[in-house]
Each structure stands twice: as structure tokens, then as C-alpha cells.
Image 1 (cartoon, rainbow, N blue to C red):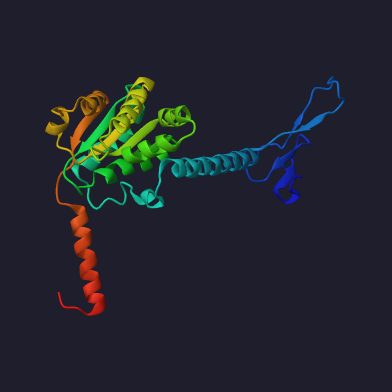
Image 2 (image 1 turned 90 degrees about the horizontal axis):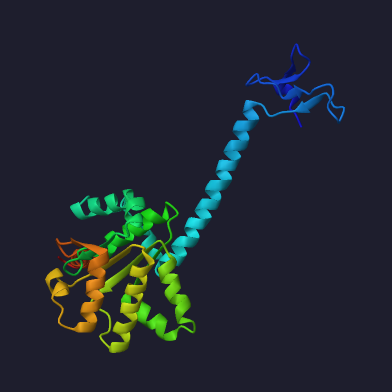
Length: 265
């Protein structure tokens, strides 16, 4: 229904919008089959309002999809807070991770992944999670897990092929803690199958490890070497070094509680 206060009758007898001055009606040919002379048309104001409403609905649907993808991606809710914006400082590694996200379409097309390696507690998992969250915001499907969780899930899964396909279907798979997996023949066989299946799917893989790169490249165990070689085929190694962030957090917590309880430093 037209708002009479925002319209006026033009010299041609049609109703016009008082705001955008466009007609809200149009003349039809005299010989039209319906015998109607005037039809309704949208003015610029209505077109803009409808476009805005459509954009808002699409954004709402996008946010719902992103929230769903994030629930699928992470096993821990706290991981959603690991973002580039929340990083303590802009390190060279963070910069490389951001560039990976910025060039995601090319990385996906060429099946390029990353291997974050370095000492314990230097933030390898954090950087990988930042990449996950940044891509999730772009509505990219990501799954982040670790090697032992994969082995446990495969052991319990009634349909192992379905779980394998789940890890293969996501646009980016991030597997944490390479080198901490169980070394049984069964566990290593599962891990190789997952990595190899991902490789054959032609989709990127990101993984993290506390192992030195030299140790990864020189692994004497044949079963492990098959896994590591396949990962190195897919992933560019990036060293993540520096101070142990976990030790810093422990010291900050101890200092806080000493002050809280009145203990002297």
C-alpha cells in the first residue's frame, strides 16, 4: 500500500514518490489483453529498501552458516577467540599466516598447505587457529583436530569411510600436534591413510609439530617417514620460535594469585 503522505500526482496523472521523484505507476498500452491502463512499479526508494532487506537476510543466513561451520571446525569453544586481531603482536609468522589467508583462492587451487614447526609453547596452534577463524569468516569450510583424536574417532567409528570423507570434504584440514600420535602400527596406518586421502583429494592441509624439521626429514621409522614425506609434499615448513608463551601465562597466573592472597613476590 502506498503512503499518501510521501506521494503526489504528476502532470501525467501517475502517482510519484515525494522522496526520489520517480513514478510509482506506469501506463500500459491501450491494447493490452487485461484492459488495465496503469500498473504498479517500484520507485528508487522501494528498490533500495528491498535491496537492503535482501542484503540483511543474506548476511543473516551467512552468519548462521559461519556459526555452523565454526561448531563443526573446533572441538573447543575457546578456539573462536584465537584471531589475528587478538594476537599479542604482529610477528613474521602471523604476517605469513595472514598472507596465506589473503591468497586463499590461489592456495586452494594449487593445494598448498603449511607445516608450523618449532619448540613447545611458541604459538603454533594459535597461528593455525587464526587461519581457521579468518577463513571461517569468509564462509570457507575448515576442520581442525589432532592426530590422536583422529585415531580415537576412527577406532570408535561405525562407518570409517564416512569419517574419512568428512576430513577430505572440508576445504581446509588442520591437524595439530604431529609427533605426539601413538606409534602403534594401527595408529600410524590410520594417520597415513588420512594424510594420503587428503593429498589425493587435492585440498590443502595445515599441520603443527614440536619436532625439529631436521628430525622430520631424517625420521628412521619407515611408517612415520611415509607420513612425514607426504606432509612435506603438501606443506611448506614455517619455523615458529621465540619465548614459551605458556611459561609466561603460568608466571602471570602465579603473580596474580600471590597478589590476591596477599603473598609477597
